[in-house]
Length: 135
Image (cartoon, rainbow, N blue to C red; front, side, top):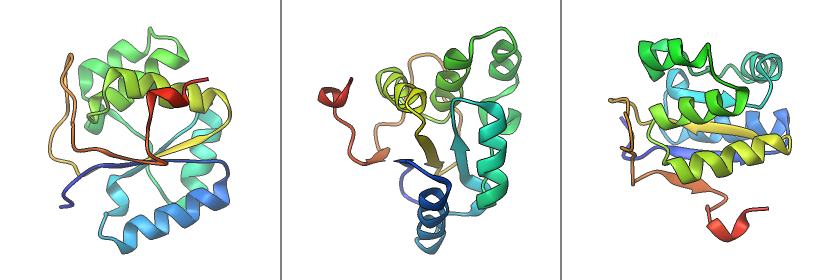
């Protein structure tokens, strides 16, 4: 298991493929590398094109999955990231990046799902996250 979760934002499927290959070379299991976009069909396309995973019930938990049936797309995406340890503020920022067409790649160190206001403070963001980057 890796020491930390890594979250990357990229602009294209080609960049996603390169990033995922790099993550695998650094020790992440393909089963723990997830892709997210603002559109479910695009997420499926990126996942198939890169052999990555999509965040499902086993990662986000049954309650989050059920709640996502009633959420807007943005709320659902933030909930998926929050379940894997992304803080509320950073999930909002990443969702806004997806609004702009970016692809989020989450290489999860695994081991636990997060609830409520809990988050993983060891996550590393690429490019580095900064609240000043907000649009």
